[in-house]
Image (cartoon, rainbow over all chains, first blue to last red; front, side):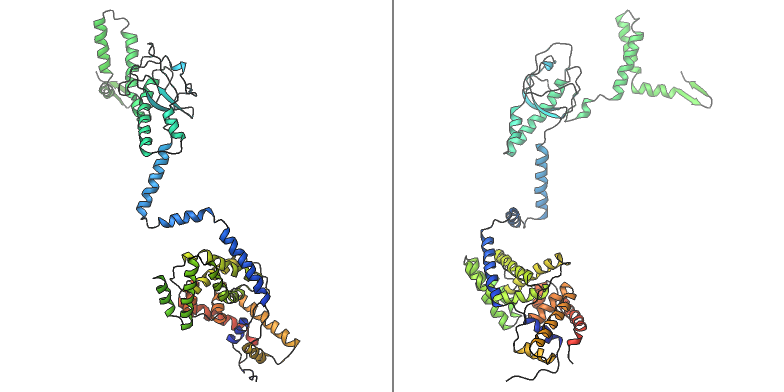
Length: 271
Length: 210
């Protein structure tokens, strides 16, 4: 027995018709087949690489921000410290083989310090084994005098350490401390070679003589050449040298400048 | 603990939903324990409902089939991540709705509709009878035309409005459940529903009988 049709058709009634839109039964058979195939593929298929990474990250997600920052900082610091300390040497120094370099054999070196050093010449990093190097705190350079031969070779310890992929923090820190010390020593030993400029990586300013000293030496040399040449008596010459040296000091220069007075259209000197 | 959470959530829903939530939780536990075949019960239980929701959102049979399958696969793959903070079916619906929304946004310019046949039940027959007194082929043509008009009206809505009206009017979810599925407030659901109904009424005015 069928009911009479309703007088009123609402929006809800119309939308109810949409519920009746259903696929035929054969559709579901195909749907199930495809779904099972996909399910199997999902079970067997490999997950992308980042899935495992995400799982690991999720495990550490409880770490506070500060600890994470410290971890990242430590990682970056370790990464930076792995880069070898570089030295810019004169362009005529070229050390490319781990063997004795004859050109440096005549360098005047006093104290033997067999320590590993890493040197970069012309943007190429080499390891140098200095067989005899003077201490950095007391550099004695005498290019004219013959000295014991200096052996420069590749440092296997450093290179082996950097070549390997596994490091221990102790061995790394020890190696880099050694390299740092030897670096200073090598700087002073290479300075003995006449045309080689060596700058220490540790404190470059100590390797540069101040401008006042250079100026002082230049003036003193000029005065000595021009005036002391005529002095026959060595006592007189020494006395004059001392006077010139004291007058060439910074205070002397300041006094000299104070004597100069330029005003208007004339210049006056005070004696 | 997790099961109790799910059941607590389910308490706000109807008794049928509560029963459903408990049964689903049992199946989830079985699947987690390694009984993969238990997931087939989930598929059989929800495939028609999910199909209906996604079909009314996309208006395309082929896309709907793919999206429903993908939703089941995704839920199967991440079933260990289901923490029971919501009922399983809202979790499953959320996966399906999110996939569908992403798909619709990606293929905004591609509009291809394929309509399913209306299976006339008692209620739907009454509504059609109220709208037309034709019979036979003419009636079928009228139903087809009405179907297309309904589909067009739904597709004119924004994705969010369409989702809300589909979940509420066609699938019969409550406001709270829709809010959970769509990850928004109940107020937002109500407002979207109101706006969507207004638009649909304007579109379907010729078919509404007062």
